[in-house]
View 1 (cartoon, rainbow, N blue to C red):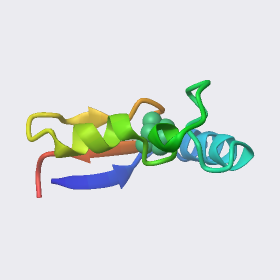
View 2 (cartoon, helix red, strand yellow):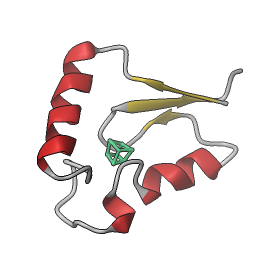
View 3 (cartoon, rainbow, N blue to C red):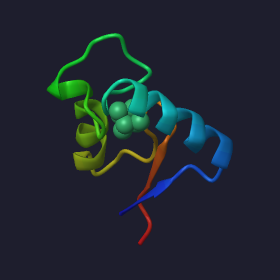
Length: 67
Ligand code: SF4
């Protein structure tokens, strides 16, 4: 399992700016809580799921199942 940033530098830049503006909380969600602090609970759960492969909600990170 590997986690990498999106290959699209523009997306990475935009999401990082969004995170900064929200004190590290997900720019794709309205709620501000421990669950929405990057890496958010949803993505942590997706990382823990042995069958999940794909992007986090904001598409900042990609989880691949390959080594
Ligand atoms: S892991 Fe992705 S979806 Fe979750 S807070 Fe970070 S950028 Fe948003």
